[in-house]
Length: 427
Image (cartoon, rainbow, N blue to C red):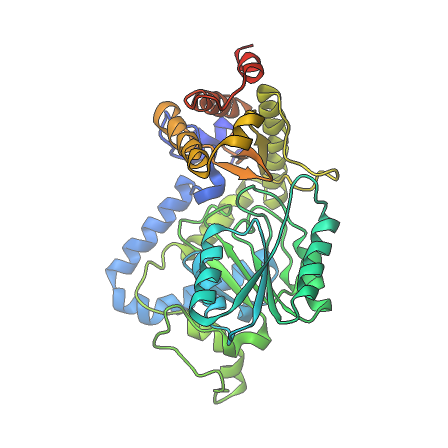
């Protein structure tokens, strides 16, 4: 298979609508045609004899897929199970652990919104408190972030768990997740890595890193059909973690099993069949891995996407006469890059929450409706940014479409751009 990337790869391996300019791979991922076809073949096989699949074939295929994924992220196979998406994996852990009123969960201010809602639920229902680490890019270095976490953990002696991302969603920034995992070990608190943007985006080595819990989408950056994700649970926690929903395979925390084999397989045997669902998504992972290898493998894919992100970010920053959201060490950008929009300081200072929400709505909808593209916006640290995602099917010309779409969207809201910004954007 040719390793030519950009639009050559787009037309050869993907089936996007011809009018669509895909700039938001980070939200939902995209599955190559070859992998889609393997999934459809699997669906047909399931329908030929669903009883045989659900009672026999599923278990064999799960073992094979689990073996492959555990090698991909270098995790212990018996610590590794599948869930529909990262949000389900997150809730599986948070709602399984025997947390009690007054316990504290530490997390960062850039936490994914769905996860933040889960913590709100835990506080409202069970009295489990949250303590937030305020991250302010671009000022914070990796070292600053680690020290901020250390400070908040020490200020909250009841801390039981610390949650942090591999790469945050909005803004899309790489966090020092290996250092934060070590910090949790040093301070004797549980570590939970939200790696929704993990597999297929950044290099992972869970045997070396050894967090207590890790979850990552397979469909987001791994080319696996959506929704599919992996949950990794350290062996010492197997007895505490239960499926969501709790189902046929439930075992009490104190049940030890009839044999050593039962004990070692406790986690994977609980999670293989939770209930009837579409197993074809995560069972298509071998096809996705094979496709990735045909493109040259993880390092080749990562290099193209990371390099393109830097070029796209530089182009967009030059277009808007602003800058890329990046720290002094240049560690924030991966295959996602964030660029500040030239919103008037006066507007940022004086606009209401409702007006800001309306601007976000325009930035979300106008490019989709008028340019057939989507570039997610986010307010961070008093400024407005867009996040650009880069994939092997993209090339720099795609981002020229994206910034034009965003420029026109900004012009739809009076007062957002001052005279200087308007002049800059007409040159």
